[in-house]
Image (cartoon, rainbow, N blue to C red; front, side, top):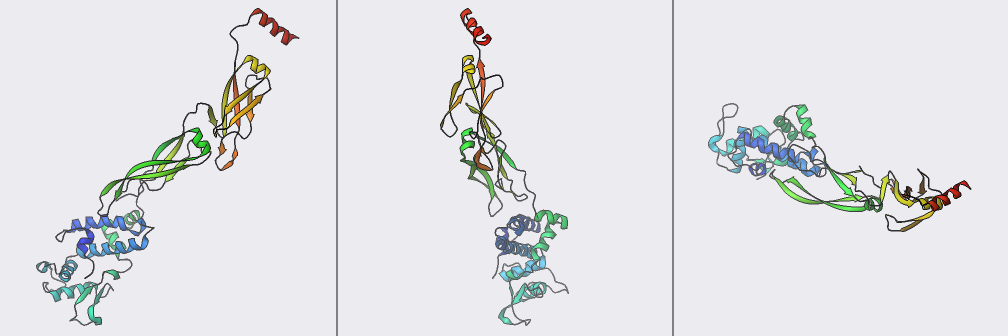
Length: 333
């Protein structure tokens, strides 16, 4: 028999023109080939079917002939065709249907012949190539409007900060982020679904790095879903601070250590124990640089920044007379 257009558009047999067009708009936006690049052939076929359904059911003559074909009992509702011929009988419905579709390639006669006495059969899969697109323009507006529907507006990106420890940014990790989004079902209604997005944190990434999941926002009839964007944020660390690709460690030392030397011992972000000897006199502004012990460089994680050790010298609150005398002798010779 062919495609049941009422079922296809999800409407009742007594649906009015406005309800039919509303159903078409909803389904056309869902199945337009430009919105389904991954399943273009399936979308094109579906789009053509719903376009045919709208074209037939919004035209009184075509709808009456179609209902006759399906035996839906709407005989009394067939309006007169051009030339004054009334409707009502099955053969009249066939002839009217043939007048509309006989020369377009979307209608064929059974039995292999073309005689006037043969019963017409609806052949839904043979619509002209531009059929659906022309109807889409008629429903949605002029060329400019149609172009905008061909490329639906995209919702603004949804941005969320993703806090990472310095260890995670040093070593790399994967964070599993749970989101709840709305998706459209076949009837055009929205349903909430939970989804896990794996965010791969690469070694050396910096604060402000953006990770985009295309079109993972809520689905809607009139918009392309928004991108979800995670923005890396850096948690404060108890030992190190970060300056670009360098790590900074601040060490408190005594005046004696500043003058005579000492060893700095610390645990690196990847768990190694590091010992750094300082033999220089630590003066204000002095820092010890350890090459290659900083953060991985993002685009080439085999390279590393530097470890920069800075010092805060703690001076004694007071000196005894003897201590002062010793210091004077040390520095005056």
